[in-house]
Image (cartoon, rainbow, N blue to C red; front, side):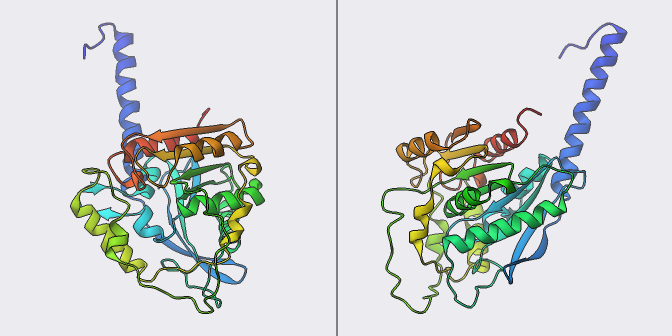
Length: 313
């Protein structure tokens, strides 16, 4: 790079370098020093465990992450692999966001309730209560953003349809809606089966060769089975029939992994066109699959999320 010649230009050049260094240092402080903290949040008399990572510097936004069908917050959103940056929470904290992740009932550190079953309506109500609690922790910021992955994207949409006032925007990734998913299931079992989770299931989302290291997959499998050894049980899945993109009136980001087998482009096109907001964006993550935010497209994925939360700023 050629250095500027005049004193005024040299001064401006040094100032730009200093600002760049300060920005980098801001991100380092926000990211590497963020501590994972466990909270207990009441939701209709049930204790929900919520995990948080908050920058040491004042955050510029806040977001709640909702995990998928099988695994809870810590393996999904805070995967710690020595020598590798794979945590979505760390990446968002590095961008200046306060990040929260909820373990739904029967997942991770949140116990099942007396029924042992989770339903779509119950999960959406729990997310709404957690969002209210998160907002009280950051009264100086705008309302939280809500991010749902896979099954969590359906929970998140269901919540937003009922309580749009609780969020600044909605982000959906790995959205698995397809023909037949809203059929009425048989609820013949009186007792939740509590089937054990498996290593094969834990590794099943990593399908693009070379997108994640073998070491990272092994760490994920071990973490997933440690935090979620037993599969959570859902019923009353006919409640998913309430999902209606026309009832989504908040700013919405639809994220799709290029190679995600659960994200069908034709379904995404239909859903995206139906969102009842002009402030909407559909982004395909190149090279990504169902777990793109912890694979090689991670940096791009986080940039898109951050840009959506801070558009116009």
